[in-house]
Image (tube, rainbow, N blue to C red):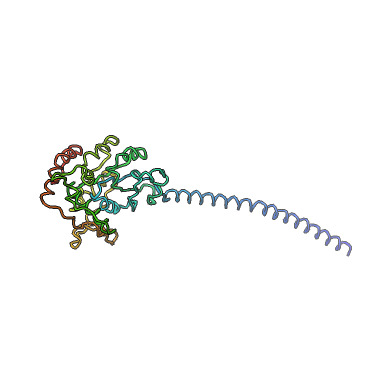
Length: 318
């Protein structure tokens, strides 16, 4: 009986010792396991964060300074050119004319303000701004150069006599809308039967004078001249030339345009949606007698020839 009791006690002691060993092992495993799990979690989080950061940086949109600017001319087709360039998937445009370089109150606000007027773009996309008032403003070329000496400049021109009449028509309608009187075009254009060189709309049509200032700052190859009359008659060839100048892959096609017989000019097609320029485009011009128009065309012959020599091409103007 005594031996049986001693044997039972011995078995109990052995079991107790084994249980303590097992418990120690479990505690050791538990203390190391969370550390390993935390390490995995940290590594996974770091990898995910790095991947997410890399992905977001490559897809981040931000407002960038323009890589190309449509500098003019006023009433030359700048809005049509901007809207047509915006058909390209790699182009984003500033929707409104910014007038940063030619309006002192804007220019004093600095490049941060100018950048804030630009659209959000992805890396690799081209930001385009257009303000036709830049072309004839003497202070603008140097200011644009200071912003970016490599910026690409687009100048769209049309028959300077037609441009002058269109310029007058816009001012006339603006004044009539505000119930303000305005002189007839011939009264402003002619003085004692001769062309008045002081008329501002006429001065804006002296393309050679304004281009000369730009060429004092920028090389000729950095300024692309668009034929505004050709753009209206057949947009695609002019757009293809602009794509090449801007070093964009060819993405705009003839299928992006259709002729609207009601409006009398081309409208745009993109992703199944069509868009026509607003009603002010293609509106009838203010009246000007045939005799006065002939005088205007004669006045522009010499300035036009000087402009043709500067750009290395000629245009079918009056």
